[in-house]
Length: 141
Image (cartoon, helix red, strand yellow):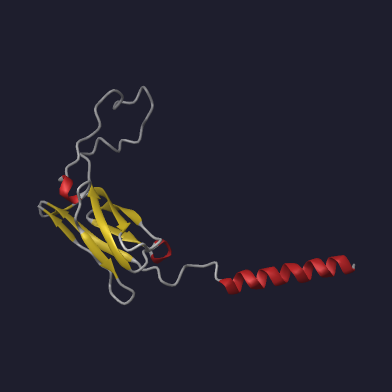
């Protein structure tokens, strides 16, 4: 009986400590949202990536759908500067069917529609702040 009481006491102590240590969302993470236009129209499908430049431990990306993207606070970015990269294939690159009998089998991957200066050679930099809206819109000609 004493053994059970000791076990319950230790268990409750560990549970209390883990709650106090904060296993939840880090307080410095920020939601990041925005809109991406390609040739003046909302980008229908693509990807945006944020790579940290100030040594912060967060970096993430999101899918762009109908021109909009969102990284929720739970997955958000810590304050600091980030290099932004934008990608949008021609619709064939994300077919999602790797089966050998797929209608896309044997075809070349789709061509990237966004110029390299916005993705692999990106010099786009945005700063996430603790007190700002952290909305970043992009208009790619």
